[in-house]
Image 1 (tube, rainbow, N blue to C red):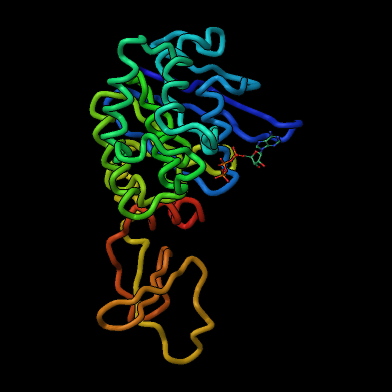
Image 2: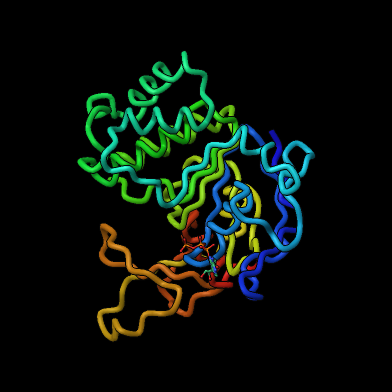
Length: 288
Ligand SMILES: Nc1ncnc2c1ncn2[C@@H]1O[C@H](COP(=O)(O)OP(=O)(O)OP(=O)(O)O)[C@@H](O)[C@H]1O
């Protein structure tokens, strides 16, 4: 499947939230939509999922407008919203049954699909517990199971790792990467490590505009030569430069700086991480 974002602009009360966005998303890819709080990620996902109409532009699914025909995408979409609908008195199985009926899953497939998803999301032992007795992370996994019901070819997830512990984050990351083999998977997040190891394509969104669209490898190549490390000076530690962070290394605390050049004689150029690259682009240190 091929989802084309074509000149999308959105305003809320005349305030621009998204401006002239263009991108091509295809099946077989995990696309990471990264941006700081308020960048417009959820607004863009709402347009892609037809919950919000843009003021300008179009979204094409295999060449056909989903703005004009929202059902085209609704039939093939699994959407995991930031806030999962919460029915405290339903068990996980009852909730998934309800979603399955709403999604039009064939009656004779509902039971087997729910069982397989509960297994896959490590919920088989708790499927008959009420949702009000679930931890935040377990509820999130139920939401993911609901998203995957009927095996939708397009999966859009808004901050899917929120509330998950480190082990669950890794397990969800693996699941999304596996699904991306034969699905179109779009994951919005502001946590770079959630998609670092698994994204084929990255969209960097800031103030409603894409600053970068492309592979993580290209982004990191752009960032070569912009990351420096030097030992934390013993005196004047309060004079830490902007765009810098402290890192504990075996040889002591190092200052890691994003900058075109370094004024510190002891600074060494180091290999950028994807997080460095994103911060460098967002802060304007790394040119577009
Ligand atoms: N219904 C609305 N009415 C008016 N302004 C809105 C509305 N929804 C979002 N906004 C504004 O639009 C901008 C983008 O918000 P959005 O939720 O899309 O960003 P985000 O990147 O998803 O942020 P976060 O990471 O914090 O969830 C923000 O300035 C937000 O305050």
